[in-house]
Length: 460
Image (cartoon, rainbow, N blue to C red; front, side, top):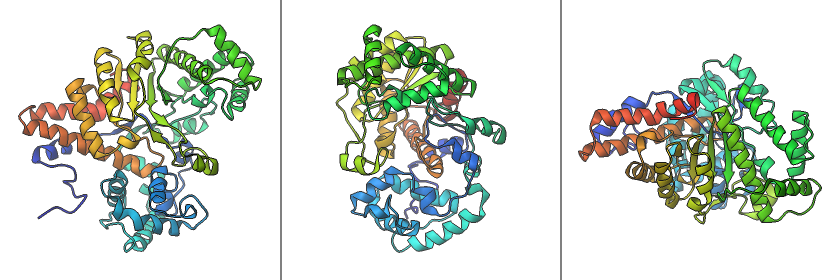
């Protein structure tokens, strides 16, 4: 007889995999990349209902609701949360195979003790049960979730313009968990785009420096970098649609910078060169501070224009591309920082996994990052791990990241990854390609030890 879906054997297809999972399931979570806001943890305010805790900030949910024709009013609009939840629940049975289906059922089981299949028929019952528990259970407040899940380090994603007041206060109020900022300067590098000049002026105001010239901009960036370092930051994070990282003549960039500040039109080539110079400068700052540098490659932002114009960024209109010249684009960058900087490369297309594996194999301080966004699912994770193990080495994998905007799924995403990892290693043992004790040791390294060393030392 088949086990019920999401039982203890979920994703674990043999006894050896279950043994490996048993050894790693309780290890602390070190999450090197999330979009959870430190201010939310500082407030520690309860959520009102299952929609607000699970879907109100999640563009993954919104995209799939739109796929099934749910009106926008019941997604990001003014409809009551219960109506939004009922609309979402009605399409959940049609999402089997998508990780949203898995995460939702895992979260309901892990945090609410509910084994219900989510559907239109069960939606109201789940709404009532979860609403009651959210109102009465301290473990379901933001800090309670992190404590219950044994999260030891959570890296947020933060603008260099941030005062980091929430992080500072949390270091006292939540001392058993490290809530560390991550320096994410992308908006300052997007020269010539809407809002860029305002961001540069804000940078000058925050740092008290004159940013009317490129030299002042560089000094202001460095000042925010040092400020983040004093607040425990261990990494910078950057989004790149296409990693054409090349050197550029700084005198030329200085002129481009001044022209852009004056409101003149900047060419696409000038924008790309400016971004590249900024990324080299970021790398230098990171190397000096012994931070690691995270590059997220391949997302084409705001691809659905109608959605962007109506709702703005991060509303569910982004796509992936395989048209990235990764080997050529990264060549000068990884060679320039060879041996001086730890670089983690996240990619969005399966074909790029192999390419980055070969680059990592050639450069001891370059690593393939966790499967993220469209590859954050059991299917791609298994192939990802198999390719990494075969081409480079699985034991140096820097660990899973949640990349999450919501607290609950931070936990289920890490648990899902640990199960896929345990099952992959269990298969190797079953095939007589590995010894059990070695598989357990590698699982422990990947799950906890490697990301821990990155946070502490900037290198695995």
